[in-house]
Image 1 (cartoon, rainbow, N blue to C red):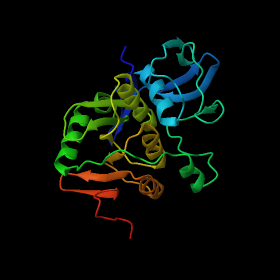
Image 2: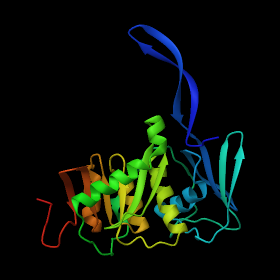
Image 3: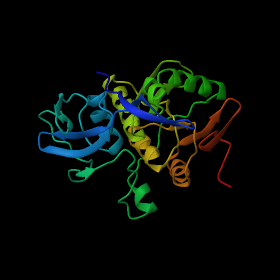
Image 4: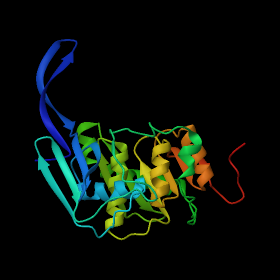
Length: 265
């Protein structure tokens, strides 16, 4: 069974009427993240790379899960449970998290912009020069690895690329946050340094992805879609950079681009 997508019977509608056929749909199910004290987060996600999803979610949300924690995946009638064995997950500096997150959560419970920025770390890593040709080549590499999207047209992808290199981590999920978490979790599991990694997104970049990147120690984000105002404001405040609308001959740079350039008129 392919957990990325499922083939189901559907009707196609044309000017000539309806016809019975089949289509591939992206898999979406309930995934509960838990530790020895029980469930602390419930996601709607695609049930692939679930240990990496747990590790990455904890990393990008500021939870103190050890990369060495033993992780078990359990399947039940109502979805999947991914558990960190003999370990209690706590939000760094705060009490234990308890929340339900959909495939596109954002910062729904935040009281305001200042609160969104107050608990995010400043990026202290280096910023290497990025060539537009390398960005486009990296997006082509990621596209070739988007097997779920090629079948369904309905899955997000996130990739982690080291500047100037072709080696990459590419993950897919029905939720763009989950795709990012899986990519980060894979990187953490492999013991790789986040410095000089670029996070590639198959869609847009909002505040939530900038926040996840900041907590993971990733200073550069590139996306084929748009960047929101709050994402731009946050990237500038944290010393990060975003390349949006990446195309063969042009991209929009926001934040720390070059030491002598300021992009905030």
